Image (cartoon, rainbow, N blue to C red; front, side, top):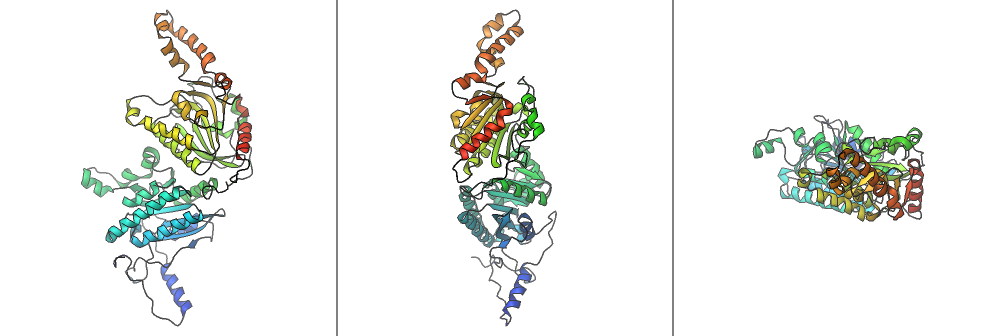
Amino acid sequence: MPQFDAGAPTQPAQSADPRGLLTQQRVGRFARIEPKGKRVHTARERAELLLDEGSLVEMTPLRTAGARPDGTSSGSGVVAGWGTTDGSPVVVISHDAAVASGAIGAVMAEAIMKAQRFAIDRGHPIVYINDSGGARVPDGIFALHGCGGIFALNVKAQKRVPQISLILGPCAGAAAYSPALTDWTVMVKGQGQMFLTGPDIVKAATGEDATAEEIGGSRLHSVTSGVAHLEVSSEMEAFEATRLLLSFLPEHKGAPHKVQSAMPANPFAAGKLPTLVPDKSSVVFDMFALLDGVLDNGARLEVMPEHAPSILTLFGRLDGRPVGVVANQPAARGGILDSKASVKLARFVEFCGRFDLPVLTFVDVPGFLPGTVEESRGVITHGAKVLKAYAETESPKLTVVVRKAFGGAYIAMGAASLGADVNWAWSGSEIAVMGPSGAVALLNRRELAASDDPAALRDTLAAAYREEVARPYVAAEAGIVDDVIHPEETRPRMVAALRMLSAGSPRA
């Protein structure tokens, strides 16, 4: 270990009063240093605010990465320990911006990795509170080696425990990779930034003038890039969102689910279900109104709400059981799938499968967005990731087509062929290779070209196609769809299926 990083551990003078000496050490180490800039709380205060009151137990609190200018010990640069949220154990790792601006040195990396190993071994979720300027430059290769060790344990933890990253300050350079390797990232608006290279380096390398917020602010990552999954307004809101997210997640893969008392669906929304979805497939409606009539009327958490909004991904409960919910949103671009929506969807389904959360899929999809732009973005590859996610997920999968499901997008939205355990279609829905209008234009182009009234003929042929080919009874009679149901039957059917699929499971 280089002398300039860890330094020689501060050796207090011998004292005949060991109790007083320990008290003195603790006072020096835990002395509050006023947060700088937009920060509101210290690293230790952040950890305490996230966890249940009085539950934080810090790991190696006297570890040091050197001394402050006044000679007192500075700490390792991170507050790492364990505690509980709503009574469930959680490991928390909180960067201390008061020590070298939170830069990750060799000692800090060792402290983080110790907490990561503890969480993986014991099966506890990890919450990372990020506030770091990147790798600690004076530590050189030792800092980089430590960062690499953190990343390797991020990957190892993916197979074992949920990981959540909070971005409450800068998260720059090497430090930005760790959140990208965790499951969910929450950023504080106007305070958190994530980027590999900051404004000065960008200016020097490319000539581009851009602020830290423009390069890596919360709006960029929560709306455009999809690197962040929630944008919040304050540190306290970040802690509350994290606690809510943890309330839906098991402590580790294979752990029992956090089942609560069942709550009925919103009665007003449930009463609207029979007439909620317009008959005409081009008329929009709000999918949230449908979900309100099916899911338990309790707390939910939508992730990535502003990124690729044509697909909804959220955590909620059905019959008291935590579930992951995927749904097309007709109110946003008609619920169509594109590259960004596919990445968002695949990521969410894969996470649910990894931690055995049931996946409920509500389908109203016109297809994949066509065109050169989407093809150049690799929509084929990204769409295939959705197929892979559904096919590999072994947790219960329930799918209902509520209005339309056309082409490859029908398959991608959790079809029976990808392993849906039970799937239904509403009585007014349509399932086909393409919509009636498109099919008629392709199949009957000669008749339409020769007709004196092609519009009327198109409507007649489309109506016939809709009844003879696209109606869900064709799929039901073939056994591809398990049943055709009325909208108001959706919740009881899903509840019964979920109970059946969960019976005997240690996770139920």
